[in-house]
Length: 276
Image (cartoon, rainbow, N blue to C red):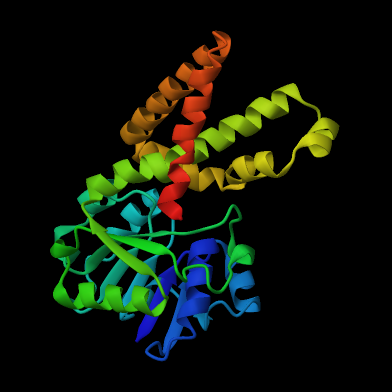
């Protein structure tokens, strides 16, 4: 199986490293507009070769590891691929992508979101094993062709991922609460602290809790601006509900209602029972 990956940053580069280990993969080809990314991908042996777009289109599987707007744009250039080709996108929002798929290649397409990543980005951030034991959400899979659905499942199974299935609009709402809103909070937290504290105090006093909470603020602004645009409605709802919850905690502190504060903390502790 010849696999071409469009986008050789953290997600695409890490995927390439893992796919090259699979026996069913004959070659992993890379395509990226960024010349520096191309050079780094070759230097780090992320892909077997950097190829042109026509070679990408002749591959058995095309993986789109680029921002959402880029995915939508590239799909318009793939209308003439063979019926047997599988296209898999890794976008962080799904409904707007699914709605933009040209009808000619709807059965070629599998909408996927691997729930993994780090705060780093670019091909130098690529690591083997990024996908292992992580969740991948496959959306509207009944709209994909049988061959394409089987191919996508095979790829993600070989990476050691846990597969979940849902509708694209369901994914976007869930992702807003579990992934997108936390990034919005992290950026806001980082900006709040930097406007109040100097560098020396931050370095001296910021312990593990702050570092963990603010880690997401290192994520790519380009990628996350794209996600915020595409999932605006769901993210705004999540932020508003978070603001309501924070306001209630603020009011309890202001009123010195320490029983109320304690109860909210206990309720929050319940989240970790889900993971244990």
